[in-house]
Length: 214
Image (tube, rainbow, N blue to C red; front, side, top):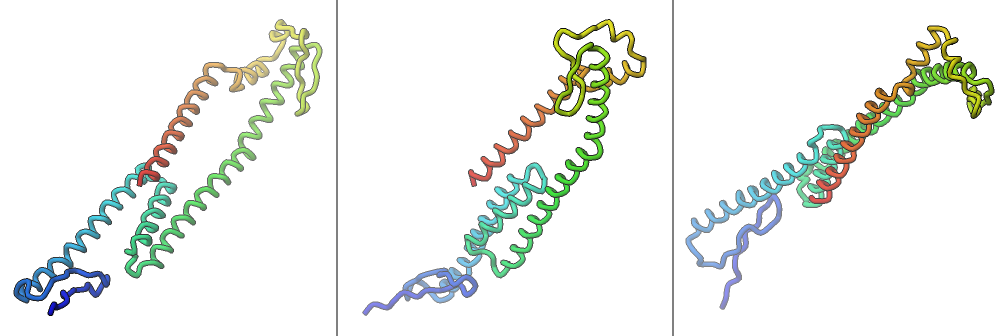
């Protein structure tokens, strides 16, 4: 008559720790093997957590709110998927919700700043430049027409360069201070802006690669 093997179960995770047939060693040795198997299992879980934490930290290399949200979301979702929440489901949910709220707040602040800069800063500067250039066109051309913004623009063949000498010193200074009238300054600013955009595109592709490679 065969006796069924004995099975020890971890009360915390309800997983079998050791299966041993009766008579496979003295009871003291069996208890030692069971005692050793539980820490080994915990060490495996801790090593998985450490590996996942390192992968999550790789996503947060830029240390901005978007990387924090992606890393937090992936970490918590992975813990839920692997069944390792250990009663901290509410804590993880509120942590992810708090990071998401901060990210939305950051986006709202950026939109608000951009809108008000356009409204109170750049719109006034653009209006001043348009008005000054309209007066310049009207002075330099003998025949002009109005564009969509109601500003004077010279007609072809009606330009007289000699009229520039009749402008006042203040008018010449205002016209020469318009950014688009300085090619070197315009090219440098466009170059810096273009390089910045390339850097953002690189970071976006790098972030997508890190997420997909998990």
